[in-house]
Structures are given as structure tokens and as C-alpha cells.
Image 1 (cartoon, helix red, strand yellow):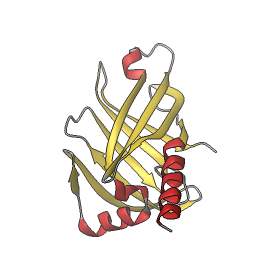
Image 2 (cartoon, rainbow, N blue to C red; image 1 turned 90 degrees about the vertical axis):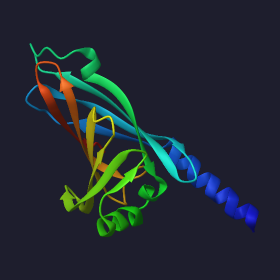
Image 3 (cartoon, rainbow, N blue to C red; image 1 turned 120 degrees about the vertical axis):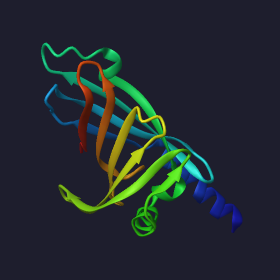
Image 4 (cartoon, helix red, strand yellow; image 1 turned 90 degrees about the horizontal axis):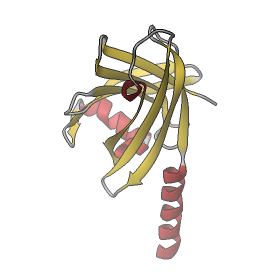
Length: 168
């Protein structure tokens, strides 16, 4: 029986690690769109790493360097956030700090057909970027149906926010 439970948990973990969510970056003032992918790169006993890679297509004559248009960063989150119960607990308990990053629940919102999505904000200690995510339990891997990434210190612009939605 233990072997079956172990094999099942290993299978589920490998499915999460293999899952990639693809988002379409919505047009903004300085960009016409782009793509964003989210994948779980590592899952540990207490937390997991969600790697976010993005490629922003700037509008013509907008001087945004390649390092600002394309990038990858990793958000390390408690393992509870692979399940809706983690977001529900966060809504009740209030903001929490994980590895120097503050995570706070901003409420429930509808995002397209995804009703009652958990809106959360992740502020890393470095403050080079801010991440807002809308979690819905019906979405695979991280469950993030929509993201907002606010890049800090973009040359000539300062702060710049980019929104993305699940493309399916």
C-alpha cells in the first residue's frame, strides 16, 4: 500500500513539474503584446519554484533594451500554493513572508470564465519586480490564470506594468 501511495505522489509531482502554462501578454502603452510562460522547475517538501519567462514586443520607436523586453525570474512559494487551500488560508491569516518575499491576498475576482479567482501579490525582497497573480483551481500547475508583472527601474520609464492572460 505504501508503494502505491509513493508511486502516485511521485506521478502527481512529475506531472506538476512537466506542466507549463502559456500566457498571452496584453498590449500596453509601450508594447504591442508578447508571450509569457510559467513552469514549476522544482518542488521540495516545503516550497516550490515557479519560473516565469517573458518576451515583450515593444511598439515601434520605443527604446526598451532587450534585457527589459525579455527575461526570466523565479518565484519561490510555499508548497501550500499549489492548492486552493493555501490561498484560502492566506485570505484568513493575512500577509505572510516567505524567504524574504511578502505574499498577500487581495481578494476574490472573476477573470473571464474563471470565477472566484484568488488575487495575490508577491513582493520580493529585492523589489526589482512585483508580481500579482490570479489563482484558479481549475488551471494546471501553478493555477495562475492571469498575471501582472511590474518591472521596476525601466530606463526612461521607471515602473512599467505588464498584464498577461492564460492562452488556451
